[in-house]
Amino acid sequence: GIKFLAGAFPANKPTLITGSGAMLKLAKLMMNSGVQRPLIIADGFMTQSGKLSALTQLLKDANCQFTVFDEVVPNPTMLEVENSVILAQSIQADGIFVVGGGSAIDIAKVVAATLTNGSKPKKLIGMMRVRNKPLPLFAVPTTSGTGSEVTVAAVISDPESHQKAFFLDPDFVPLAAGLDTDLLASLPPAITAYTGMDALTHAIEAYIARVHFNDAQSDALTAIRLLLEYLPRAFKNGTDLEAREMVALASFMAGYAFSKQGLGYVHAISHQLSAHYNTPHGLANAVVLPRVLRFNKPHCLKQLAEIESAILGKDSVLPEQQLANNFIKRIDQLSDELQIDKSLDSLLEKDFFKIAKQALREANDSYSVPKAMKLKQVIRI
Ligand code: NAD
Image 1 (cartoon, helix red, strand yellow):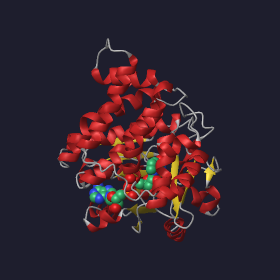
Image 2 (image 1 turned 60 degrees about the vertical axis):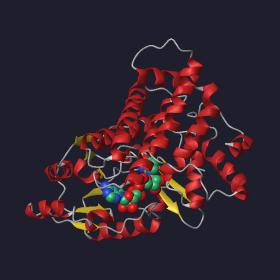
Image 3 (image 1 turned 90 degrees about the vertical axis):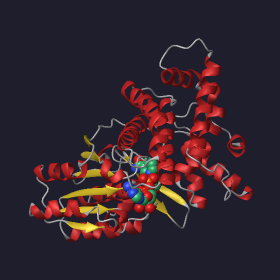
Image 4 (image 1 turned 90 degrees about the horizontal axis):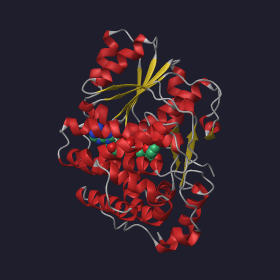
């Protein structure tokens, strides 16, 4: 199995543009950088809502020869990647501009790398398989969760084997990203909640990882604080653009943090739940996160206490144990505020063993996890 959780990549951050109009600013940056025949990969909601037309109009006015691919589906498969590759090759694309959730961005990453590596996309599955620099990639996330606009990863599903394939390489990091509040306002409350919990999980798993890069630790901590403050606001009022921007920024920072620090058991377990029952990735993370943290607590007490102290904004006289407990309680409270249903009705006892085994295959030996888990422990989680 590929260890999505390995982390410790020498990742760079993309050039970042934020705020209202960021998508169009990013398109101008792309044209100024010399891209003449971009493939535009767009989430279906962009075409359906008419929001893509501002972009296509700008490109037309600049005489840019673009083509649009909008057959993006959640949890994309190789089929969408291959169709998009064929289209990009047919127009001799010299750049990729993607606007959509993590699903769209992940397709775009694999397409950008496939075009310059003369290979089938499947050959790029795994770690450090990209030989030649991918086509220049410009990414506008319309969800705030995966951090795909900054990460070294792309995730493509195999619907038959119930497995996700991970593509990991620092060359997958987009050249530039735009966090556009105009596009984030329409994200429905439930998806806002799930994707936000995905970002929170990235930040926490990165912060408690055994590896330690100062810049990634600092981004993870900031992301956690921003999410606790602004995610409930974005959930309650989607048009609160300040909250939308802060959650998007937090997701970006969390993505950077986990690219360098890796992920842990929350992701390893939640990936299996999504693969088996199609549970949305963020929902699965939200359910698993407090349970894994309670298990991990003795092995990352200091970090959990540090997070709580940072949230309180002052040195606390409370013992580490209590600070850590209080932080985990905050996560429970946040889930409640976001009306996350923790029941996981689809989870079947007969699948426990298989899920736990697959989770261990994904997570163990990673130097990111605070403490290796045993099969029985994962089953009990
Ligand atoms: P998504 O891209 O699948 O989108 C979820 C739904 O929201 C879709 O139906 C989409 O049409 C809709 N949508 C998106 N933006 C919208 C908006 N602004 N307004 C209205 N509707 C909107 O969801 P996601 O959580 O961003 O991405 C999930 C995928 O990302 C999974 O395949 C997961 O494995 C992967 N992932 C990748 C990374 C990475 O580093 N590359 C990290 C974590 C997860």
